[in-house]
Image 1 (cartoon, rainbow, N blue to C red):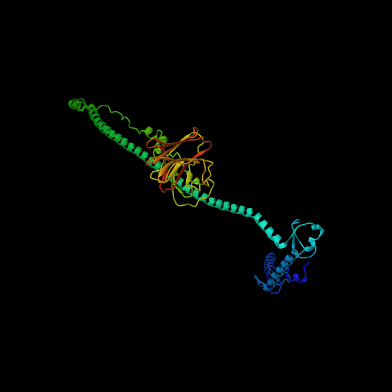
Image 2: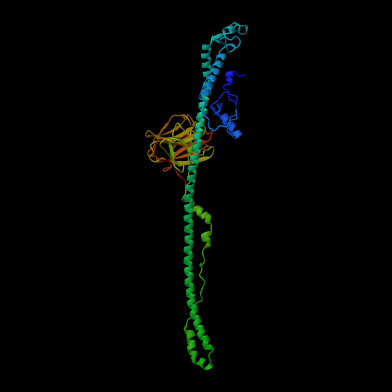
Length: 456
């Protein structure tokens, strides 16, 4: 039961110690939230104690009562702390720590039967030792929290990057389709123009033919009309005009029978036959296919890829998610498709690049550190060519001014051959029994572009 002094600092509404006390003109005090809630329920601003109507909708704070409540709470907390620092059984100060029971005890407890032959330490020493132990136990939890926070940060960055990727990819798709739409529109226009040209030319021929026929028909009709008129005349006039009529008919040579124009109709077969195929076949000549598409999700942050994902160069570091597929130790990017059977070939145009490496890399190679094995490549750096398969040492290659390099992987036979496609000269061949998926591999520290050569 609360004492009389404690009752004075209890709110009449919630019966708890005042929180932000306010007072009404009638001098009664209440918690601010309790009073507002009371008024909302009663829908009238009256004092919950004396029912006097309050003209104030926002009563002032009772600072004296507020300070009194805060002082009371602080004192109660100090009393609670003092009670916890005393032995509940002997009311003596807890000065020792029993290592066997792992509890603070007083000097009387030390000599009691319950603690016979137990080991004790002074409270301050025991607290220091246990703080160190707890801190040691806390360290893995703190480390784990850091890992989770780092992963959360990376996931948030990845989530933002997904939206950026989706928007960029959508723009590229629209760009490619716009190019194809333009080709189709131009092809449609060209074919309709060809159709209209044929229509115009053949219509002109037919019109000329019709005009010629009309002229002949008019002349023949006039001869027939005049002759038929003579035939209808009386005998004397007919005989008198006979020689003239015969001469009119016989002197006019009869034209040859007119013939229908061959090929006069529109050549529908030419315009419509295999239309879709012919357009597709023509479209093939304007596009190319790359045997290797680079995977931007594997690219080191300092590698910049071309829009069509067939070229790369070294550049400024980009802010990209540290996803598991991404290389972050060496400037490497992989092909998007790996091979675990069959033969595969592609050409990399290195041009005047002064630092490049191309080859294949095993799927299991670690991507967050220095690869120790699973890599086969030919490269140019520090002014010289070399071939290397990790973990073996490099082999110097004596080559001159190599502009392109062909990579030919025969996974089944375990052969990886590098050659010069311009001269069909073999450069180097690795033999190895491949047991896992192999990915095309490109690396560079040069700002000049390396490109996967397209195939028509």
